[in-house]
Image (cartoon, rainbow over all chains, first blue to last red; front, top):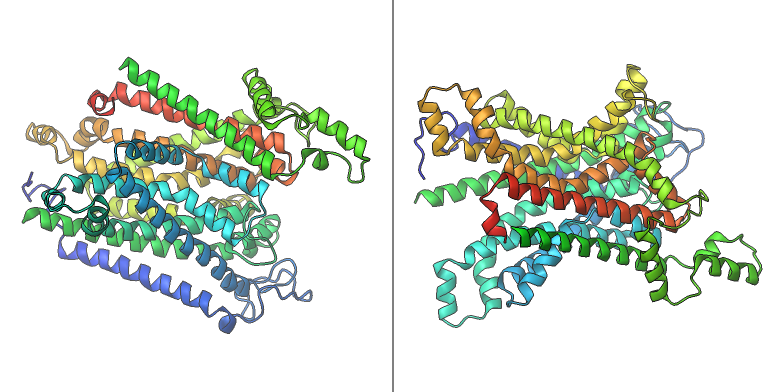
Length: 291
Length: 308
């Protein structure tokens, strides 16, 4: 299906297009590294502790002393954002790894399991995909006190099925190819084929998924915290800080808006990385297809 | 075809029942004794026992589950602790506003996705292509409550054009709907752009070009119909995000819908209400997915054989 390159909507990615992809990718990586370093080095960078109260400096607007201003009990918001990044990034990072691991296992099972396992796994994935997660979170957090492990579990529960579906689709595609048949003829077990032969084809998509899911989890975790279902105060998390500011939206604009920038910048960085990698993977596949 | 519909409906019913049982069991087993939550703090043991009997938790769990289902089938989801009113009534009061917000947001999002996505597919390297990527990336990264807060700051506090919250008339819908739209738009935009790009490479489009039809007419009249099919599937999955977004937006804007009710119920540990809301919304979600699947087989006859 090679299309003539003269039509306006077609043709391979030109130099400018590739450059654009790489610039977005690079910007994403730089932003992410900055956000992660800032969270890791929070004790060095923060001007005060994240829960240090200063009742003489309540709800101060942004100034050279307090770049993001202070909240209702005089805590420095920039310090809280720096420390909050540790909680948010930890939950999203570990959640993403958990979700991809479980998703890969289930996706492979859905493609390589025996004839009883496959439909069963398919159904489970379908049901998981069709489940509204905010509701799940409400039910879970009304029953259990939300803590970091509980939140990580929620992230995994909310995301694994999407990963499993992607893995399953690619694995099913690969299963029909000659190299898999050759491995079967040589007597390789299905587990061996799945993990050693097919997994490398899944990997590029997994990397893209990793970036996208982590971005989504940062937003999801912040949303839960904002609803009061996240890590409990006074431990700062990005959504929790914004919850503090919800009641002062009209009187202290900075409390509800500036800390949110951390969420936006971090997940934007991850989305840029995901998009960039996706474009590169597609370009790679297209080149292989030409050959 | 007939058997496909029957199987799909049965599957949806099973999912709804599974969700209801799970929610019931999770809340019953982990939430603690409803009588203790409900009764005054220093109530005498016999008073607590009375509450237990009223609530029916002195009976075996399986019997409770049974009567819960029987009652639910008759439309009785129990009494709310907090409001001292039937859960069904409370939900029926809040549901229309939530559905309105969700409907407006979905329609707005689809409209933007179709127009912007098509333009971006037609001219990927133009301003439209850039704008579509930027909107998708931003919408994916900005949480609903943050865009909501910023919208309030700019349009309600700063410019004073629109109300900052509550519900009095259609103007209260504008800001929440924009915030929700931004959060569900990215997937739809990406999917439509990709499918439109694929459709534009098809032979029948080339034929239309050869006939000398104008590019915009080809895109929006001939290609759009086919390019919209994947969008339909996405909507099914998106309903979950949509619900989540609507719940958050309701909280930010103090919009009196299901989401706000759920949060009040959560803070008051009003288990019958939480249970009712979760089950009703989940069922609604499953039904929408079912309808979309059935619609799909009507719209695209090619899908029929593959699925059944």
